[in-house]
Image (tube, rainbow, N blue to C red; front, side, top):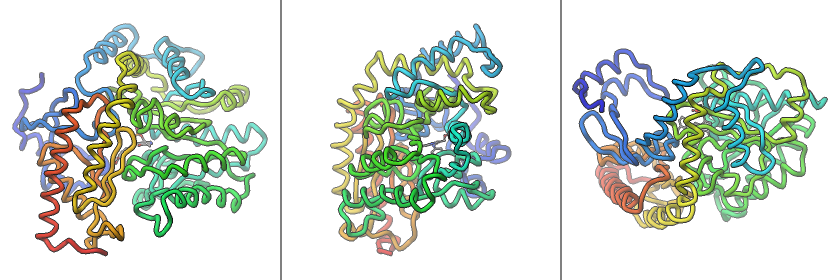
Length: 463
Ligand code: PXG
């Protein structure tokens, strides 16, 4: 394999000199040098110094099948030899794209039978914005253009997708959001629930959707988009009352419901889709990441019979990408879905791995610094706090303690991310019980060390 590389410092110097990193403070990174990842196998990755790191984040929420599956490599190679590229734009198709569309229609909830292919999750949500507005225009309601989404939701980084997202730091750069995107509050009980019980809070936050529809007028609202469980926002698991109420509101009003399944899809929540886990009946689902287990880039918008019928009957839909339905990506996706299904990886994730991980993960709530330890399927979150009873935030400001914890986690050879002062995991679905034990052991060591450092540095103070 590619073990014969330059020394780490040289690789870091080249990286610093020429590589502009996504979502990174460049000067901060270049001063310390990036961790260079060399290879992956199962749930472990290896860096350029030979450290074996348990990848608790599946790359970036995507390597659901785990690293090192040769079948996906072979599928890509076979397809590249056969037909490395052809477009699907001007009345042509190819076998990988049509077979993948058929397979996704089988896997997706009942009435979602039509697939528009994109290159990523971000492009898929841009597709959704254009398709939804075009759909209503074709139905004679061109004034239905507003899409409602949520603060602290994440839907991607293109102009449209970042506008849908509720990340204020992203809106602050580059003149976002685009017009007619409106945000409501998220169902984050730990952070924002106040005196309400989780169930009361879930209903209250769902009813913000109804209030917003009524405020804007149903004749202006085109759709609501949300992640079944917010990922990049910090693994915010909604109270059980939330999704049924959202579904009721969407059914009661003439708007489309978009489930952004880019993270939740393909087994992450313990079922094929987050929509299955929460009994959501979306009109459109956004997928990417786990579709190919991240081996190659691909995204898709899976749409209902009704939406597809209107779009197909409306003349040319003037939208698409060179790589819509890319044959190599589609071939890899098909092989990935075959393995996830035939090896029972998704089924086992729900039946066996998720319950075991839940039991171990929730035990972390006993740690003095952990307020809530929540988990849905294979996505978990720890809210760090200096005072569990009042759910206090740290006086040092959001992210100070989280970053300290993340740094220690990396040193302990566990990839666990921080979002503010939440620590998050989303390991590959193929993780074993023994590997979960390693994950938990390293997480405890990390929490202990962070706790000691927080105390030593005088940061154990509530805001
Ligand atoms: N929707 C959701 C729910 C996502 O999580 C996207 C759309 C966009 O997908 P692409 O393929 O365009 O990146 C995502 C991506 C983080 C982080 O900090 C998460 C994502 C991307 C970048 C950072 O956890 N998710």
